[in-house]
Length: 379
Image 1 (cartoon, rainbow, N blue to C red):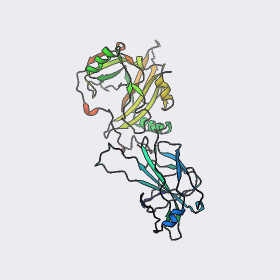
Image 2: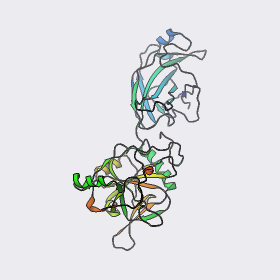
Image 3: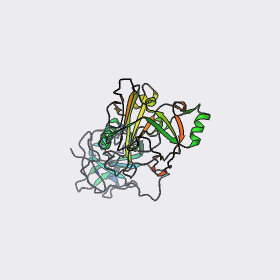
Image 4: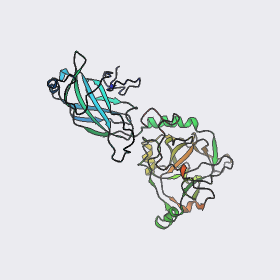
């Protein structure tokens, strides 16, 4: 099956619209500009005879594809041989004016029964706003095109990663997770004012907040899931939490079985890095039946709490009902607990190490060039 091409004499073995419903063509041609109103041979009469797409509808939106259809007047409809689709990222008023702008993507497709599916991870990114407009065209005997006017401009936003994409990330993370180390506590570092506020204004509880935009751009939990970040990584030579932290000099520690036990579900949330050798895995701990659990069930891959490569909870061999916990050594785990946590369940103390601000992952952007933690969809 042939596929549509970009309109700047660019070709690629990776089809920008692979999997379209009907046959589409790979035509490396130079499209007219958006403000052009003439056919490529300079004749405006032929352009006016071609129907202009009306009532454009976008549906079945994923992180790297969408379906598009429209209405057309019947006049000269049989003369249409191609559709020109102009796809652009919506301008962000807050974007860096000195940053290189994205090249607009103009697709050329054979005229086929609608709707058609546009698919392409190299020009569609998840959670991104786009504009789209369409022309009809008739290929002439000399190779030029007669074209209609551009349609109205339609806006849409691509979706989050699906569980299919998250499972691809999960598989990549499993490759580098490393051996499992034993641990006994979850911990959370913040400044003293944070814990004072929890005691005085939040009934001695740490409350959930909405996850920031750190990690993969397509993560379905960013900006949506509410929870509290915890760490559990230990130093391999001491078996204890490190004394340094990027988030504050005061640390809340709580026994691992308080947050993680057979009544808790575990989910994989993300895998990313920040232009460094360190890789991060985001996991979600959600008490069974909680709102956070219901949110994750619909969006994230579930992990077996007794058998996975990142974080496990198993019954001890002593037979006394105690639980044993292990974490992956070679990735930094960021664990989100989806419910409030009472400070009375643990203890708060000042650490002896430094506050390493450079290690903070708050709103950290994922390195799109890393071959270890990226998959072949939008970053």
